[in-house]
Length: 624
Image 1 (tube, helix red, strand yellow):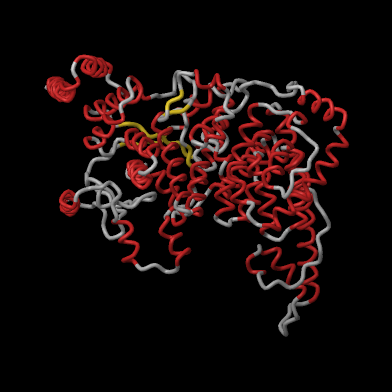
Image 2 (image 1 turned 90 degrees about the vertical axis):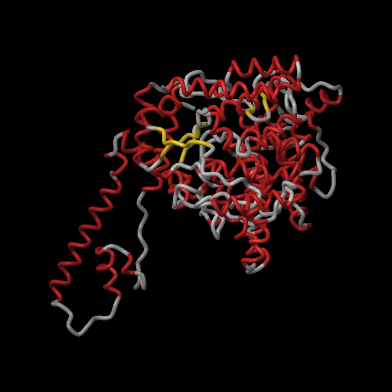
């Protein structure tokens, strides 16, 4: 649908909202002082008369003036849509959208601290208990080395503090992390973060909006800026040490995979984000190092945390993270997205679902319209597991979900049904189930077979129109639905209602259904489109989830692409504003690394040290 058509629909919606209905008589209100002066004056008519009441004619005059003002106000409200031009109308719509988005994506700083959830789960924990948990190391460090780190921490001014959130060089506190005893104290920031000027941000939208010219995009950005939206980007520090770390990482992951080399590099570059996240995945695949893997993800999150821009930091503290944007085109922004995703997974494994939900909101708020990692496919799980049933309903009714068809995912659709059941709203649950069934009949069929109390439907998969997106999206919900639908009465409700819906559905689609079933019995699936039409955010989530059942639904041709790396899955294709890892790699150093590996592994470290010294000398000569 074109943007003009969408605007027309939104205009009609706003006209309906602004339509005037007869106002009921208002009684005396204890909160009258909260209203404006006109309303306050009108409400005094319902209060008892005071002894020193002014003359009657004056009071009547006031009433007439007020009535006239109210009438004019109503007439003005009736004409509001007609009087507004396109620019003013678009601004109203944008304000409504931003406001609604903030209610579903904003979260307080306190909700990002898992210690607060522990207090809610286990009562008022003592500070000593929390301190013991925060000081526990997961890296297998020797006691002697740990004592050296503690002594170094005392010598590093501003490091840690009583709340473990202090960092050198600033009075700002950490938001996402608390400093651990086995983290190497340092005064140097591992990354940079800067604000993107609105005039520069237009380039990030230019390649996405094929139908809009630069002037329209600039107007759109100006409207967002007027509403308080700000744009940021992470970037690497351009020094010799970082270039060497980036090059060694690229050689050990892309050129010739070498997990042992990554482990060694982590000791030399303890805050190199890509290495931290990659080693965390290596340990996770080994199966018995989950705690160490999660500890590395936390350290990577700390690297971003201490590098936050002042403006971004303030937006988070004001619970206005719905106004901060991080374009996915920047490589280090993508690393931040990936780090948040890994951390959400780790929080879920610890059963701190409320904190995980808060980070889901944060991850979504960074690019709500694009949603590059597909938060829409898993946020419902954390909302229900944290018993935030009202939020689940609110999210399903938000403009993001109701405006775009693809946002109404199987997870959001059927989790809304369960949320209504948890709230004892059976009729609303029945209506939500009908809506979910109409949008996702194939998911309903699979859910009935997996959750229902019997499997007596005379239907087959050939009865449904299935494509790649439907298969993958359905599986993203099915892998977790059993955990959520664990109440027998709710399963009975689902079984009975789906049985009725399928009965009606079969009558309406009898001819097509019977024909498809016959084709299916002979092995033909004429209605299944073998097309790679799944959105990129769904593909990214499917790969990042690591769920075998989900990944099995991915099209085989996807794996033949040359842009699927564990550290950067399916980066956006754009030449000018996109950055990738190779932009931070030293090509001369990379060639030397490859040469050393093919010739003599033993001399590799010596070559690295020699190249570092050579680069230092070149830098000093340039300064002279």
